Image (cartoon, rainbow, N blue to C red; front, side, top):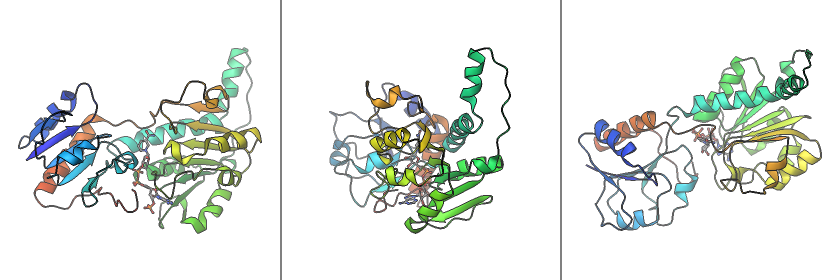
Length: 309
Ligand code: NAP
């Protein structure tokens, strides 16, 4: 079996050495942009070049080194019938739950107020929060959204969840499809986006959507930058409909110098770190699936390319 590693890591051996250990039966190659076809059976990729699919015609499946496959589906020449497999959790959902909880607490527990008081040497206690005043709404109830929703529900926050299909989640009030989006938004003050980027979800977080949230609204975007209409975010902040936004993903990354987001106190910016790919857990998952696929067993995480996730 031949496995081809295609990711722009300057030290590919960090990946290929463990792949060889986990999959001793495989011949492991690193992508050479100028090399010949190796007739790989499987490719493990992150943002691969279009040339990959021109050259490697015998691929049985391609494994993405991330949960979001919006980038991969855009690559020209990706054969329509090729099996595309995304990463399923692999240590990301716990990181995401942690990140979202942190951003939520910044808002709900007013942590900036206490930092400011410290700067001024003030000891002042504010009233405890009422959880009923901080209903959270999680868009997307997949591997990541579910874990986020469950974590916040365990801390007694009121949690709403919205997905394409119906879900039944303990402690979470769930809504499904475009018809129930309005109800979901009306019941939500802190909106958390964990959706995948698809034709249906691109630009979904716009002025109209943000305006439907409860007063004093907060946005936490850990999905993709292209979910958010940036000018609309600035508009709702200016109008006071939204009081705070924590953004981990942006339409253009790195966020360009001089972008208006940098100057806004109400916006917290992090450089796409809310859930990092963890090499060990990732390779264990992918090599396990390669082995199962090669044996003709069913594997999970196959992307429905017509749906886009
Ligand atoms: P997933 O398991 O595929 O879950 C996707 C969820 O979104 C599902 O619940 C799905 O609904 C819902 N959904 C998709 N299209 C929808 C639509 N049109 N309307 C309503 N709901 C819709 O994905 P995941 O593993 O949780 O990952 C989600 C995304 O997180 C990734 O695609 C990626 O963009 C992002 N991510 C970001 C980072 C970061 O560091 N910032 C890291 C990892 C992932 P159904 O349940 O009904 O199918």
